[in-house]
Structure formats: C-alpha cells, structure tokens
Length: 347
Image (cartoon, rainbow, N blue to C red; front, side):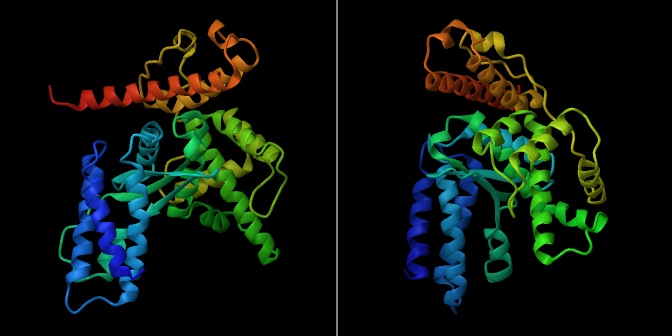
C-alpha cells in the first residue's frame, strides 16, 4: 500500500491501542508521539518525499507490533520486568521494554529507533519526542507464561549490550588475531559474540543459561555462527565456578576500556523449595533474588524430574509439573513487582 495510507491506518490503530485496559502511561506516551508525528507527516506542506514516508511507515509498523504486544493480557509482563532490571545495569539512558509474541522458536532483543529517524530526517517536526529508548523483545507465544523458558532472553540482552557498545569489536583490538582469512576472522568474531552473550547471561541467571542452551540444542557442533554446545557450556561452567581463564580476561579488559561493568555474579539463588512444595509463590526479597528465580526454578524442575520432588509433583504428569513450576515462578516475580510499585507510592 501507499505509505500515506499505511500511516493513516497505523495512526487509527495506535489511537485504539491507547484505549485498551492494559495500557500504561509510558507506552501511551510513545503511541501518542507516533500519532502526532504521523499527523505532521500527512499534513505538512511541502510534503516529505515518499521514500522518507515509506521508511517512517516501516518503523511505525515495527513499533506498532511491539506496543500492541505489550498492551494485551497475553504480554509476558514478568520477563519484561526482569529485563528492565538487567538493562538498567548497563545502559544509562532510560529505556522502555516492549514485547511481541512470535509464532516460532524465536527469542530476540533489539533496539527501536523511530525517534532518531524523526529527529534526523523529518526535521520540520517541532513537537517533543520521547527520551526513552524503545527496546523490542520477542518471546515465543507458547512460552508467554513460561518465564523459566525465557531465560534465553538474558543471552539476547548480552548480544544487545555487545552490539550497542562494541564489546567484541574491542576484543579484536586488545587481542587481535593475525594471519587468518576473512572467513576465519568472521567465525572468530561470531564465536566471541556468542561466548560473551553466554557469560553475560550467566551473570544474571547462573546455571539456568546452561539448562536453556542444553534444552534448545544439546548436541550442536561448531558452526560458522556458533561454538559447539559442549564448548559453550564448558566456558559458562568455568565462569560459574569462579575460575580465571583467558577468554574471560579478554572480555573484562574490553569492558574496562569501555567503562562498562565487569562480568560478575548479579544473582542470588533463593530457597524456593518450601514455598513451591506447598504450591505457593516465593517471596522475592531483592533484585539478585529476582534474577536468581531462573536458576532456582530450573533446579527445582530438575529435582522433580529426578523423582525427588513433593507429593503433588509425583501425582502429576510432566507437562502439568512444568506449567505449575513456571506459574509459581511467574507469580513470585509478579508479586515482587507489585510490592516494588507499592513501596514507591508516597506514604
């Protein structure tokens, strides 16, 4: 369709989204800002070039997808909440996390840039633009209420930080590789990126990232894009064991040069057994325990699978157990977010 038609339809849909019962103020601000820019784009004279409008429409389409995903009762609010806490450790700019549910096994986390585009390209717009950076996360629809299966998003956040701050690129300045072909150089870069993302995730979810990687592709061999699963798990376990090794030192040096935090443990594994054995949520006490719910939940699932779980698990089938443990994890995180919001209310 013509970009002007698309933009008019998108403005209508964004206005409708703002009236949904699950809308929140931060998302509302971005939706209305998009609507105002669209109205400007459609009425300004002389008009913008169609190619500018087409590029802008593409960005609005993407924003619409994720804003819409965060305004329904299906939105995985709990994993968004965990991501916001982790993102704040690495990015100083305010961010807004929005989610789209995917219909395939696709986890992703990427930046949205509609406001940079507007500021640089649609320079006749004089309205105020939101300061928060939009971050888009994708979660498989069937995992929308399975937070333990979304631990892989911490790995995707590692990629996001790496690409945003050029961590892996800096490692090739501090630890260059000489005398290899361009193809080998690209393979090394891909493998360094994957190891960095794995170690980043391990900082927050501990052994849960091992469980996630093993569950997704337990027997993967080395490829041009990824190290072998066994190699990845060995590196993560060395890090979790507190070992010093050359690759870790390489990343730490790059992070130091960039003025970024070190790779270090940022979680505490909570003792969820008593609560989960009674089929009730655990009371999360702080942010490290919030991230630690991932490792604790995966560990609890492993305990049940080995036959060492409570009576209710012995009487249930495997899928019911998976659902119940994920549901308890989800409710534990949700309750923590509600308590946090309540504590922020002036007394």
